[in-house]
Image (cartoon, rainbow, N blue to C red; front, top):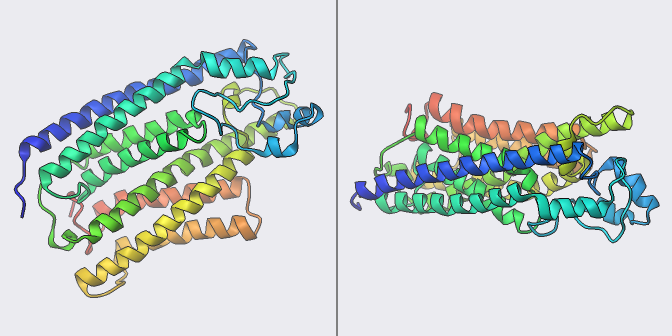
Length: 360
């Protein structure tokens, strides 16, 4: 067995602390971006999104095709607040879409600062995860502390990668907030000193099984945030359609509910494939370690429950017409099952998977 390097372990914790500080500042910057956008909307400096249901009729009358309206908002580069259109139109506040574009591109300084800070935090946290692995002489996801720190790193990294394709900075407050919760939980509740793996984990399947589970969970985290925003946006759009005043101006920064649902559905589809592989490879690993593919261990059962919930979500939305809020709630329930599986099951249920480093 490789020797434990306690010096690198301490360095890893220091880098994790610095990453947490950078994430905290980034979280504040994302929140400030939302605040400044809301103030600008109240001052009439920004109009409704081109992806908003409330403005769809105006765009059609202005000559913008329904295909353009149906495209997901924010598919452009990072410095765009909204996707530009070849047409301009007058919003309800008298501000043209061109004015809205200029606000999004030039004045969302806080959002650009937040993204830059997120990049710094991800690099620093990546170093922390790397040092943890070097200190232990293995991959750094052998207990709940390591899974949580590596998982939060994956969430932030996936968020940045997606940002290169779609402007999802409006999710920054939610995603980075969840990352901070994960890092705090790892440091306060799940901290475990650097050590060797229990015999059941000393396998190359650890790299395959857990790495896929981490990436799938990271994608599910994004869709969870999208589904929560979808519920708020649906309620807002219904209120506007009923002639009520728009009390959540900050939601103008967010795509319409349908766009959020479509993005969430596509990402959930990718994550579901990953989770399917997680369950399959876990079964193969179980046969190697314990001589059986499936034993109805609590952890195995809840991993299967997660698979069933997301399978039901994808099937219901694709074939049974479960769209809108019902689809959003199913996605949220699936993620809550992931949280339950990682926290409650690991800490309070005994079984063959009771090697989380706490409570078992």
